[in-house]
Image 1 (cartoon, rainbow, N blue to C red):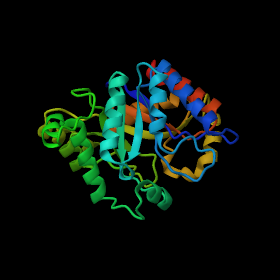
Image 2: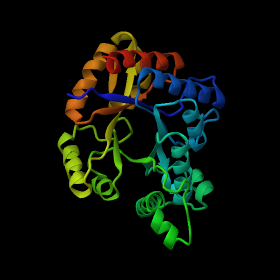
Image 3: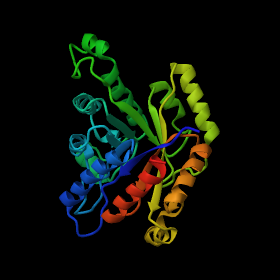
Length: 306
């Protein structure tokens, strides 16, 4: 069995008492530590919540800071709420950033629906066409990123700099192993499946994932990248981990793994077999900075360095 790799998903949530900039500072330090510990990716999310100390809402301002604070780890956004933005602007931003930072920028795309106020302020509309509008914008985004010659010739000389530069990896974020199957195959993008988001499907769905991979290969001549997003709490002992997890009872089945390092080593190997993926993106439910940093060190030693 292939040794699993693990990345981090960070919403920027931290303990009460920290303002936005202090939370952001902790995220930056966490990304640097993740790189040193051997994690594969560090992803941040986009959320528009009514919190005065929210670390960020639009993560595009934060991404260059993370990229500048690291050297090798892949960094990205999981995911951009594409319905709020111009696909052309997203393409120009991410392509340039990817080439500045050594082709290690990930562009995750989400079809989420934020508050009515965020929709109105971002788009000037009261509602979004969540399905048709998203599909059109995603297709346009990939056109701007990939079809340079056509864009230049038929778009009256439009260039998305740098010309012939590296295009960032594009990921479809989904709570299902097969709901986005056709989109992923037809658009030649990668799949990040979450089992820790609300309404996420909890079944292993390994056969569906293998079917997607083979269908993707048959259509495109290569396999997609896939990973699984898992919610967790990790501490030195099972007892400590369970005590912390008590604070997040409302998460229910979406808090997927709770335990000590040995438990994580066993469960990640088990999940690798049951879900059919080699990479995991770990979302820590804890908002305590000390607990979060300790968990990264414990998992880094038990899973990544084993």
